[in-house]
Image (cartoon, rainbow, N blue to C red; front, side, top):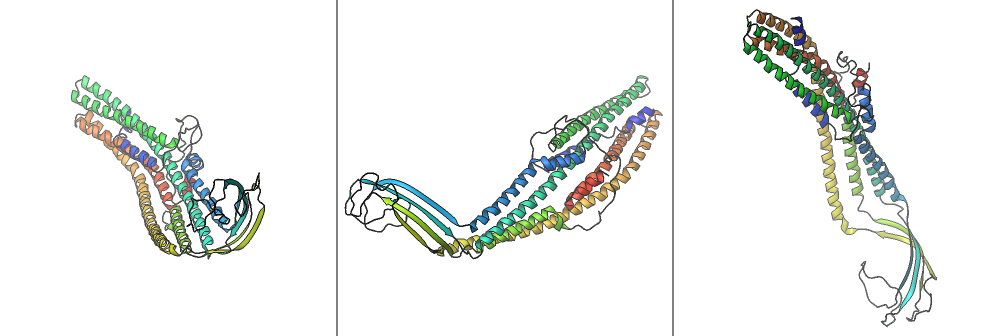
Length: 480
């Protein structure tokens, strides 16, 4: 009789439990992208180790970090616009020296030729050579280069904020995967105990049926309950394997993936109350920092676009030399004449250009960039509201989890009392087997609720701190 009471205390932990674990595991997987294969080393794994491993080695972190590195390099690229441009040239050719009077519109197909018109047309060719150096520099640009540098800096700030957001998302997902696997293990343990409990009860009913003290239908009813418990155990094992696969992708050390987890105080204690009632300031959240950086980048790009329609002042200096194997009258010089540049020139001046007809395209780009800026500002407001909603929900979930954790011990005690009474009444022949089975299921449900209630408080605390933008308070509470 005592054995039946003891074994019945965990049998209720099967119905609907695996549904909860599977949905929890699916939510943990959805929080991050896929990662390469990883495995867990032997020895207990702590939640801090999982978080640190994910923060150090998870590919999503590396992606964000390299995007930040690229944005830093783009700042250096934007600053190179302040440097003078230096172009060098050296050329040797063999070509005809026929020249014709007339205008040729600018194009990139027909090679240019210099010299007088010689009035002849023949295929004789001569050597020609040229070498030169051109230095060009913009002394001022009406703030265009400075605006481009500021836009690059804004992109760097945005990339930096993206790194912080990625770190928050990855570490939260890693910690959540750890809690999910612990819950799956608890459910599997409870499902296995439920199978044992129903098996013990089946043997008891079988003995009563064999003695013709109870009808044979009672034994069939318990056999059906045992089959259902075994089915739930299969699903519980599946949830355990799914949770383990999710956790493994956050770990970088190799070893046995079936290592145990260091649950610490997660299953035995409740987290202490802290600043749960402190007003939430979205300005400190990484998501808001990223949104502000995105707005600043759009504003900087708009300023750069507005400064695009300005005159281009270029101070230029050139030194060059040319050689030719042809005389002014068209005669060809013998041998290697023209292979060496023999006539030198230099030039210096200011080149001023202004793209008059670019105002239409630049105005269109300004309108598009202004619309992008307004959209980003609206997204910032939307992100603020979404964070406020997320925090309010996390706060409500944490309060509810604490209340449930305080109520489940009462549920367990009452369920056991009800089971003991139903068992005694059944043995006395006062109630049918359905009442005893129902009482057994209530015990299982109460004990599974109680076993996971404390873990739910920790998980709610994790989501609460993640909504604030920093899970370090959660980790500190776990490690106390």
